[in-house]
Length: 96
Image (cartoon, rainbow, N blue to C red; front, side):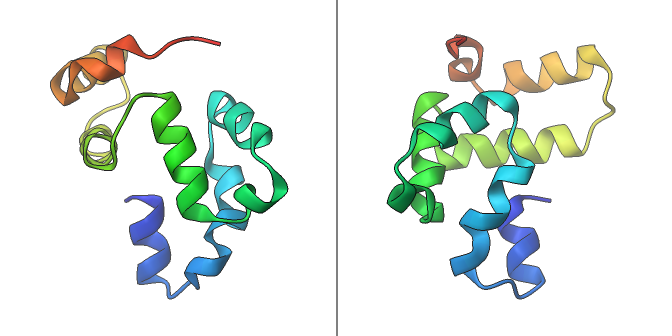
């Protein structure tokens, strides 16, 4: 289940999402978050856009990837197949 959907279902005020997000981020995404200004890091939509832009994803592609990976086993081949199925931009993500 996606971060947004989970918080909407549980009635979490969207003004709190930016505070809750860092605990859910990967190390690479945390580096992006850390580079944002204090003001920008308080706005969930700004944080989301910055992270998606860095990984060259759009919200639809990210949701598709997230949905597909949550429905599969965690073995490496399944993850690789999911990435390939979600679109080539995921494969072109730059490393830090």
